[in-house]
Amino acid sequence: MISKIGFAAASSVAWLNARLNSRLTARKTVLVVACGAALVGTAQSTLAAGKTFVYCSEGSPSTFNPQMGTDGPTFNASSRTIYNRLVDFEKGGTRILPSLAESWSVSKDGKQYTFKLRKDVDFQTTDAFKPNRKFNADDVVFTFQRMLKKDHPFHKINGGVYEYFTSMGMDELIEDVKKVDPYTVQFVLRRSETPFLANMAMDFASILSAEYGTVLTKNNTPERIDTEPVGTGPFVFRKYDKDNQIRFHAHPTYFGGKQAIDNLVFSITPDPNVRYQKLKRGECHLIAEPPLTDLQAMRADGALQVLEQGGLNVGYLAMNVQKAPFNNVKVRKAINYALNRKSYLDAIYQGHASLAKNPIPPTMWSYNKSTSDYEYNPEKAKQLLKEAGVATGFSTKLWAMPVSRPYNPNGKKMAEMMQADLKKVGVQVEIVTYDWPTYLDKARKGEHEMLLMGWTGDNGDPDNFMNVLLGCNAVEGGSNYSRWCQKSYDSLISAARTTVDVKKRTEFYTKAQTIFKDEAPWVTLAHAKVFRAMRKEVTGYKMSPFGTDSFVGVDLKK
Image: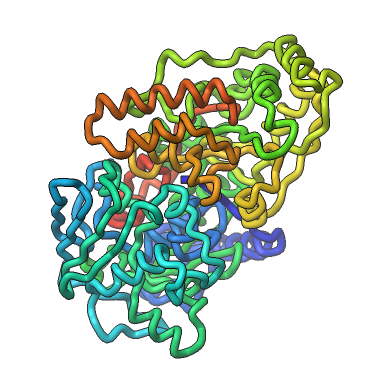
């Protein structure tokens, strides 16, 4: 999962801070909001009475439909709150559990997955929609046919880009999704696919309401399905003030039980230092991506608690191999030798990361320990540039992420350090950036030359990195930002997906990592630790290995 963040407008942040400070002056205790109290720090008179939890998120969602996103802010604001999937991962882990499907079976040839659905699941009621029936097989068929069938009436709504679905080759894998009876649905695959069940627990597989789609079609407003979402999840979407705030309330008839939090508010705060100050002042209960330089101070604060875990992530620099001179492997290798990556670990990650050499983290099975890495060697870089026919160097553009993420807490600073390193070998770099939605859109289309990016795993399987980020299908899908398609590599990861033998899968993936390193479509940068900071009053929160934030089971002590 690419964690992606949009910037809040400065005026919006100033307005929000002013209101927060005003509320704090009038009221010292802001953490637990009792029945009838106003929302902490936001002056939201429109929120229902009850217990309110404020989450200072790092950025804006790119959409409210997880089918169309690959980023943490989108998943946190949609699939983690509004929606459910047929199966899910256990809280804080990777074990697959029943969710909207109460059970499932797999045919002997691995080509048919049959799911038995729950019969007690209510869709959410919103200001614009009141369901007339419970969740059933029609909703599952509608959800997947939308992504699968190009002639589906909702396929092209809001752009029709299903990055995960296409990048993972799901459009080629799934032959059909069939309703067997109202509470049984069957997926027919063209071949066996070992990670398929885990893939069904991923965010893109969140289930939409077919009935809602029908209502929107009759009203000639089908685009609202992605902006005014309706799901079966624990929280109901209420309002989005763009780049400022998202409001939810608890789903009263959620099949998993009504949540202790009555009102959930995402206070969108891109600056990590501002997030920290809000946490200290009690203006939010939990913050995403706390500033690494302040971790020690947070741990020393008796009102706060800091959580950390090893990240299932990788930060990298992608070189667009479809553009000269990066279509020359010697140039790509030269860039690898030219960058002093170890210096970035201290300056950018404050020592909370390890140097990356493979596209998957070392904690993941099939990691190739014997892969040879590129050392920092400017002279070797110059020699390779000479051999590539660009001895005098060249000019290029480096796209810098406008966001802080665990795999890259400071894209701007890293780009500046890379700019200085590359200048030493004759490569003149112009640093550019865009607001986050534009950055993503342009990158998916391959408009960049070099760009900083990263990934947090979604299901614990190497395929989620090596196929989604580097497979040939992912070039068209948009998540392969190097736009590198190498037949030998692609054959290996395809073979790995179609065998259940872990030993054989490991062999395929380790060989593929060797090809990746030799072809050098990326400069692998870091595998970083992940942190969350919250008030001591917060209970029930668990960090996810996938880098998302779920508020199921979260509460506030009085």
